[in-house]
Structure formats: C-alpha cells, structure tokens
Amino acid sequence: MKPFILAMQFLTSFYLPVAVDFTDENLRKSVFFFPWIGVILGYLLYFISSFFKNQAIKGLVLLILWLVFTGAMHLDGLSDTADGFFARKDREKTLEIMKDSRIGAFGVISLVLVLLTKYVLLTQIDLNPTTLAGVLGGARLSNAFVIGLVPSARPDGMGKMLQQTKPLPYILVSALLFIIFLFLMDKSLFLVLLGQMLIVGLMVFVSIKKIKGVTGDIYGADVEIAEAFGLLLIGLM
Image 1 (cartoon, rainbow, N blue to C red):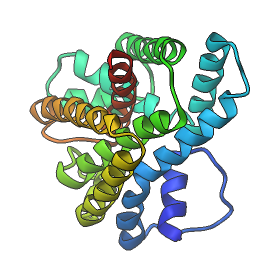
Image 2: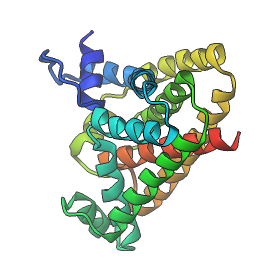
Image 3: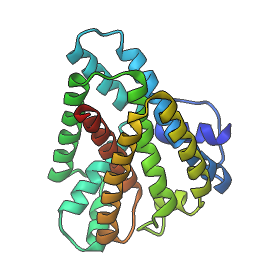
Image 4: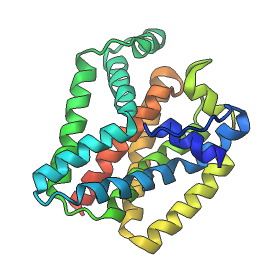
C-alpha cells in the first residue's frame, strides 16, 4: 500500500495523510503504479466532466481539473525542457537553463501549444471514460520505461533518485497488466499506446544526444507530449 500512496503523492495533488519513507524499495515499487494512477485520473476526470453537456464547457472543465489534479507538475517539466533544448547551447548550459526556475519564451510557447492542443481535441473528439483512462495511463507507462531504461543526465535530482532504484522488473509487470487491460476494454487503445511509446522514444533519443540522458524535467515533458499525442491519435482514428 505504501508504494501506491507514494505514487499518488508523486503524480497527483491529492492530499493523503500518510507518511511514506523514501526508501529504495518504496520508490522502486511505486513506479509499478504510475500507469494505474493515470487510469484512475482518467476515469475520475471523465466522471466529473460528464455533468456538463455543452462540449466546449465540458472540455474546458476537464482540462482545468486535469491541471488541478496533477498540480500541473508535468507542464513545469515541459516548459523547462523547451527552454533548455531550443536554446541550442552545449550540454552544461542546457542543463543549467533547465534548472532555472524562470520561464523563457520557448517554455511559454510549449505550454500554449500543448494546452491548446488538448483543449481542441477534448472538445472535438467523442471521448469515453476508458479512452481517457487509456491515454493518461499510456503516457505514464511510456514514461515509466524511460525511468527504468534511460540513465540520468544529472548526478542527483528526482530523475536520478528514481532511476537508481532499478524499477524495470516492476515496470514490465505493470506494462503486461496494462496491455491486458487495454485489450479487454478497447483494443484500439493498444495502437494509441504504441504511438505514445514511439513519440516518447523520439524525445528520449533527442535528449540523449543533447544532454546524454534524461532528467526529471524530461519525465514531465514526456508525459505532456504523450498525453497530447494520444488524444491526437484518437482523433485521427
């Protein structure tokens, strides 16, 4: 139960009055639950937004709650990543820019584009609760593989802390269960998951070439891009 609570504390803004030690064992097992936190968020977001019948208002409410429930933490990583990567500096300067708490022009542009993309797609496609749960879960599963497989670009920080616990065995089991879930609920979501894996893989490839690994900011950017891309794939399908 403690790893689940830790995963919930990591990925959402929900207050859980339970103290969990940041031991390697708890951190390692918590990554198992990352996609399932996305599934829970997807069903919860859909349920609350379903009370609104107007599609535009429903999409806006859904997006606002999406930000509130996640604490917009992944958006922070996206903006930092955009500022660092598009500055076209060397590795050390890029990492320095990404660590800067101030947001630059590229960060603002990335936030606007991702939020606008999500809003347009949420108002234009016919979502069902499983579809939304699959998109959010798939984005976090894709990112979990990055945590388990790709080395950290920094000697410290959240990225290094999670990566060094070697959570890959738990990620593989979670992935297997998640794929079974998709096939039982909606087989077309497996194609969406593959698309999310590919787009995250592309981002990781760029990150390795740019900064020789990944950071906590990259994790956040992965989730945001994978969510938006997943919605786009559903719209195209």
